[in-house]
Image (cartoon, rainbow, N blue to C red; front, side):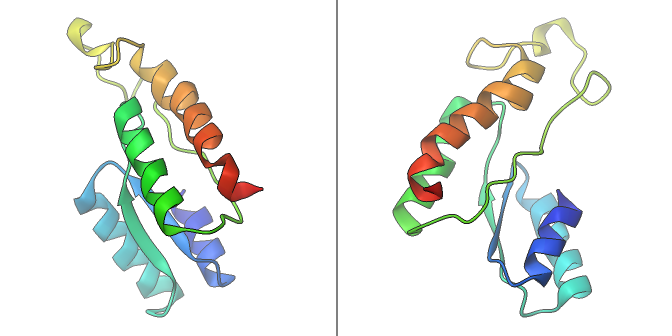
Length: 119
């Protein structure tokens, strides 16, 4: 995602990084601006793909603040090595397998919610 965001910013796109950690997003934004220029159009918006509520809030912010989206890149995800391994950590607050929700269901939900901006 970092390199895709950088390449899009370098081409003049306004890039919105949907990230679950403000700290990590700020670090990524600083690195992207250092590499692609301070005038790169980059911003952060909170998005936790393990929460359907967070996905809906992210989409609502975009729907309220944007007229269109040129692209939607859905490449965030977890694998068995990066996901929590504890028996009580396998399900999200929504009651869904963490990896399944993060890697598939939330991407689908986000895409469906943002279709009006992508048309």
